[in-house]
Image (cartoon, rainbow, N blue to C red; front, side):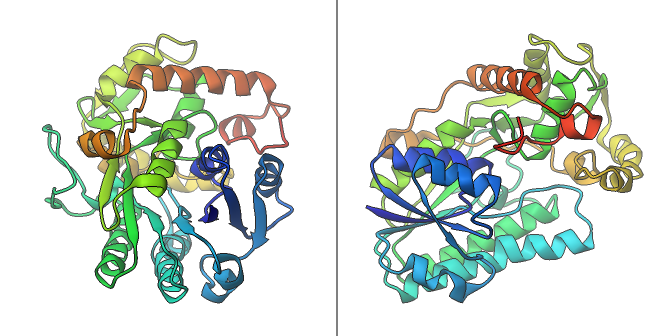
Length: 347
């Protein structure tokens, strides 16, 4: 089985590449720089890395030609983005989806997977919902908007006859995470997370990155064409999440939960300061606005794919223990360096 993969160098992509190679499938990973540490990591696993860019449709043609499966996993995930970053995010999340799926249709690829997000559905309320849920709320972030637009593009290609499956992960966690949650958990293990938090009762279904990778691979292997699958973990609210974090060494144990409006007011001036020192604006107004109930059922994926994600407690313990171990391995000890993800060859 020959798989053409986008986004292989990212946080999810590295785990996904391992899951695909474990099935003895041939993985052709599209990379912008074959000499980057991330690309070399994929090559060391056994993937073949070919030069290309999802924002350039023709750059993918040769690598995608002859593939049995296309998995479009590339994207940009960040909150608190400025105008320039919004342009990059639109290109990476929306334009890239059009490029990949239109080329897959033209090349008659027999099976494609689009990695979307539960962000497409938006806030849910406290009751669990399934794949039939329709959005009830406005977009909470620019990331959410672009992922929703990309999802709609993917649905359009399903209707046009592309043999396509859409998978929607919830909040992905794991050591060395590049997302907002990754930065907050590194603040915690470095003993720097303050006792201030917000949205104590907001529910999310945290999914461990290796479990998500297995779910995507299962969808590629035996998902029903034209279907959508929610790949979400066990639901947990933020208060319980932070209490669980407190079982591992780190920052303050007690919490003061601010009203969301006050948190946004306090975080606004911190956004440019974080960018100034070389960090994404993970402490941002968008991070607060996006802290809503995202309560989804994974029953369909369990039933049809045989997917079995680990419980939320196990996922978080593995994540925090992994971050603590990475902290011990870090060569660079400056504050900014300790908060950023580690490159594959920088430990």
